[in-house]
Length: 140
Image (cartoon, rainbow, N blue to C red; front, top):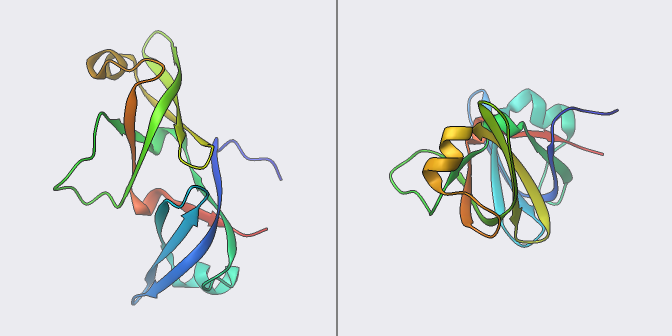
């Protein structure tokens, strides 16, 4: 199956914390960084997720925000530091590729104005921000 989701990150489940309807699933990605996904308990059961499960974390590029440093006082669970490797701008929007630890590349689709306001150029340090509810998980 091919998907249009650009960000597909392999990892290993390190913890599953069930709630009433939803669960949080912690995934260690290459480079040792951790992502948190908030998915339904039904999905946890259907995918057979448990500690040690191999998964692919998927995030649409439109759901990746960028900051020039770590952000405190926000509910966003996933903050992945990295370095801008490429910026492609169009009339209104831009795509920014971010190299994170472990050799993974993330793509963020943000406005062209944001690129300018943040001074994003190749080599600039950034932090990719991703809400846990925007991380989908797939098994092989």
